Length: 313
Image 1 (cartoon, rainbow, N blue to C red):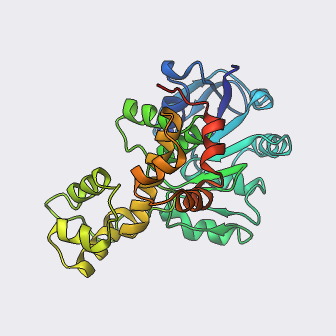
Image 2 (image 1 turned 90 degrees about the vertical axis):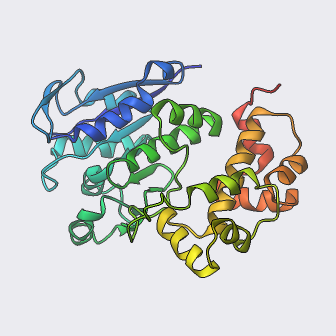
């Protein structure tokens, strides 16, 4: 299988951390059978970073013509991306290339007109500037990333990791994305709808992690918020409020997401039937599993299994 070609467009002055996210996810030696990763800029050569050192970029904008996916890391100043780079992004979009931005890289996509009429996100600190500059974009500064199909945007810093893992998950399934996450020692999946930061500081005891782990282990049971709150030793209202602060999601929405993830894993890695998987994951019936698959993934369990060509044992 020909590796999927990912090209990072490093605009001056590129945010080095943002660029390194794409490099670690798509350019790592473990991914060479799946991804062909390179970096380009307006011109090949030394490209300044926002943190005081230059990056030796091997390709000019012609590399974008061969890309299946373009990743645009953040850059500064935000009001002056190179016009040639914007033209190259527009041309890539016309060809149907998938385009994703990390953090304030969304400013380049917006200036190229690629976000007009779409929902997008960026780092919450720049939300007011973005909204004032691009009124045609539906900005949601409260989420980790937004997937609009061909065009995707992420919030700041580590949210770029979530977005890149999401791309791997779209390309190769949950099992492969989980392997990449373990290699990078990061969470396997934080949903795009999770808030960018907790509204209040986490408690000193480390929060509700133990209860979340327990819920995952017990997901085959018909769990309720009462069950989770009882495990945490808290009143339901206090538990629900703290859970929302820590995860950006309600307890039951989070648990449904974990059940879908486990269903994805079982569809990829086993020969279990859809009814068996639904029971194992706590959905109760194949009909309910199909409903949540359609809402979250836009697919059916059978179609998902066929597309991932699972390794079965």
